[in-house]
Length: 386
Ligand SMILES: *Cc1c(COP(=O)(O)O)cnc(C)c1O
Image: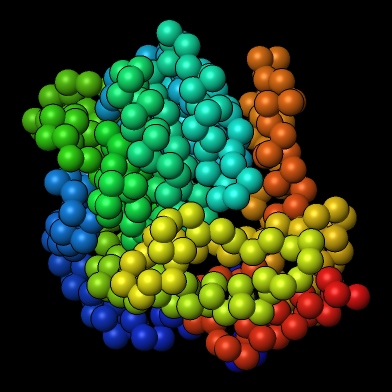
């Protein structure tokens, strides 16, 4: 691959710096054959608890499992309604449906792409049991308002933190908790392209609730709390030791990775914010993403909004110039074949419907160079100013 090829995510470049550490860690796992629940997994669990400032991290096999296990651990039962965002990856609604729960999709906000709290409130019924806010593209949903609503209606909050690990939530009261540690339980993914990614599948749950943590630890391991005693219905969902080696190498670098993403985001925004008809990403917190010590937005994606048919024009232009891009997400969940339902009314999803037609995400990773950012932004200007 040429040094100048721009990639959506550059994991090969990132590996160069991690190579020695990861290879010696792999060697240790291979020569001790401790593939499952080995010391590397335990080490990662403890290190992530310390990093997040959360009492319990429960590693598991992937982010989708983490969401499912959270719902199982909270005792959600068929018929219970779970409210989540229409504009996100399908995992959330998938596990709700798999467990026989009733998904209730609601619209998101135009500015920051996260779930609309007023829409949540309108969707609450006596059957509602949980809310799953998604910290989309690297920035927290309005957790303060969501927790207050959950409190009032006695609902559980499961944070889908697959895209925002390392972000801090700027609570209006001044607190700065880590994303994923605010609700009753948080779920994350270590899929390779996530901000903290391993070299295969991986995931984790976070909670400050001792009792819930105990329940979750059993569920990930076939419902066993004592060997060969199955007290609850569980699943087989483990983080393996080789993946933990990768995560142990990357976790101490996560803040530096987030800073690199923020820096790339600032350069994109500086170059693009003056183009009319194009909106650069909004950082919602009071610091506006410019203070050097905070990570209120960790830019899992850098996502532009473009009006009219110019999004598709830009996509075609970038393809022609060999610049990768992503459309996250092209189709609202309520319009997906698997999740369509006569309960939904189009007028309730006007923001999501419009976003699916106007978003485009630019290359975003820890290895972007100034020259690459200039090439990308120059091509965008050339296309949209024409
Ligand atoms: C990636 C992702 C997931 C699922 O994670 P996997 O590890 O791929 O199962 C869930 N929710 C969101 C928002 C994601 O981006």
